Image (cartoon, rainbow, N blue to C red; front, side):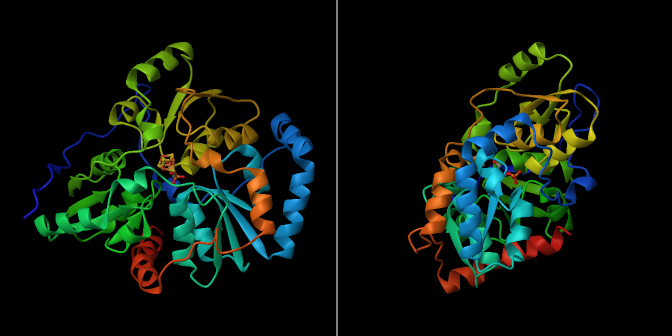
Length: 354
Ligand code: 13P
Ligand code: SF4
C-alpha cells in the first residue's frame, strides 16, 4: 500500500490584496479573450521592419501548406506577431478544437501541441520546436496517479493541462488556470486530487472551500523563483503599481497581489483597469501583448529572470523551416488508444468550463 500524501482540507481565507482588491479569478475571466492584434507600437513596427522578409515567407508558406499557427503568450513577441491566433492554454485548446486548416503549427510547449492533437486527432499537429517541453508537466506520472487512487478511491483526479497525454489518460478532468475554479466547483466528488501544480491547487482550494484537496508536489520553475522579498523590493521601486500574478506563483506572492489569473486574464485586467503601472509576476512573453494593447501604461517584471527557457526555444527561423519541411520529425504522433483515453478529460473540461 503506497504511503498516502498529506491530506488538506480547504480551510483557506480568501486572498485579499494590499490594495483591498480581491485576488480571485472573477466570473468574467471565464470569457475567452480573442487575440487582439493591437495597435502598431514602436516595438511591433520595428519587429515588422527587422523581420519583413521572414514574415512574408511565413505567410506565403502558411497558405501554400494549409497551416494555421497557434502561439502562446509566453513565446517571443516576434513569434506572436507571425501567429494567426495567440492565447492562454484554455483559448488555445478551444481554438485547436475547431480550426479549418489541415495542419496546425504550434508555437508553444509540448503539452499544448499534444492537447491540440487530442482535441483534433484528424489534423496534423507540428511543434515549432519539438524539444520545447514543460518542466512542470514532467513532475507527475501515471503511476503517481494510480498510487493515489488506491489511497483515495473516491477522489476526482483533476489534471492541470500542463501534463503529458499519458497522465491525462488516467485523469477524470483537465483544467487550465483560467477555468480551474469553475470546473472544480462543478464536480460532484468532494475529494479532489489536483495534479501536478501545488500552487494552482492551493489557489483553487481557497476558492472552493467546500471541497477537500490532496495536493501533488509539482511546480513551475519559472514562477517558483519569484519570491516575496523580490516582490517587496519591486513594490518599493514602483509604489503606485498594481501587482498581477499567475496562480502558478507561490502563495506568498498571490497574497500580495491585486489580481490573480491566467495569462489572458492578466492581459484583460490591464486592458480594463485604469492604473498606469503594473508589476507582473509571470513569464515575460506576456509583456509583448500588454504593451501592444496599452501604449500609455508601464509594465515591470518582478524579476528579470521570469523566463521559461522552453518557450524561448521558438524562433521565426524555426517557424519558417518547419513550414517548409512539414514532416513527421516535428509532428505529434500519438497512439490511437492513448488519444481515446486522454481526450476525454480535455473534452470534459471544455464542457464544464462553459
Ligand atoms: P496560461 O494557461 O495562463 O496561459 O498558462 C500556461 C502556462 O504554462 C503557465 O506557466
Ligand atoms: Fe511549464 Fe512553467 Fe514553462 Fe509554463 S512557464 S510552460 S508551467 S515550465
